[in-house]
Length: 176
Image (cartoon, rainbow, N blue to C red):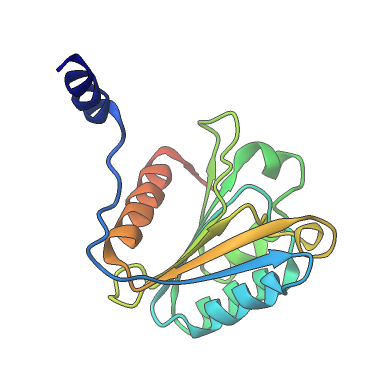
């Protein structure tokens, strides 16, 4: 009886998990070996309405160009970068994204805004979330052991990532 009561109490303290109501399509990629940068560029190229990105480091020019292209196609593009990494030069493409009309914020409210997430078409049923250890850098592609998980078609998972993005956006400072 005590064990059951302790288990219930513990369950009440744990963060809510996304219920698995929808079936997800899941794809994985790893470096070295897989071309994660081009996987990301391709997925951004397929987006129809929006791209939301949270980046700790962001130096990959091909991914930056894909985001600029998405903005030029009329998509809403939003990027939240780590303020400390920006101050150290780890987010050099924010200026180009801002000039292209993307909305850019800096998250300085944490020791590290270490999220590495891209949400594609977050409001649509076929939304996609890309997340994992992969920083959006050339080193992540060419030198590091990294991973991404691409999750599509699961509303509950997407909604959790969108809610987290919106929370961090509210807590961040506009880039300019």
